Image (cartoon, rainbow, N blue to C red; front, top):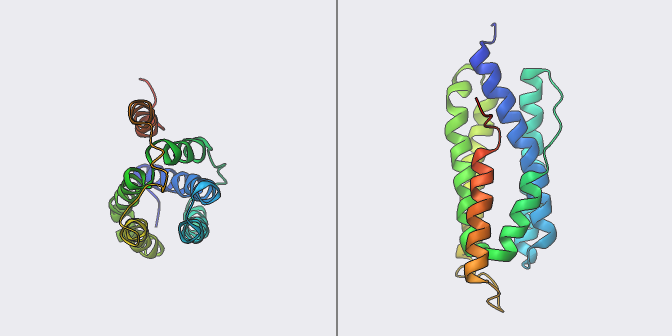
Length: 165
């Protein structure tokens, strides 16, 4: 089957996102206070690496991970805490699941990746439920600055990959 330009673009964007998520989850594992969270993030990083390999098998292109999320999300964790950050991470996983749906129909190997993204979102949210979502024992959230930083970082993340016309 010949790959359409649209599918190729989606697969390359997906491959890049998975590579970036490997760095992001490993960076989060290095800064989170809870050992279970850290271990969960390391497992998710490994799974995202396997996902990137699936997409590489389809695109036959080697990509380099971008460090933006790996820098921003640990800062957000420190600024706004897990109670606010983890739902944002889960939302990204659920969005990936939706984005993969069209190509999963054409490329069966993407189906398991798509299913994993939902599970990843559920897994990250489960980390909040296990302890009631307390961001930190010290309540070290700096309200004004932390929220402003979070808003700026979220805007940056949303605009990643968008190019001015």
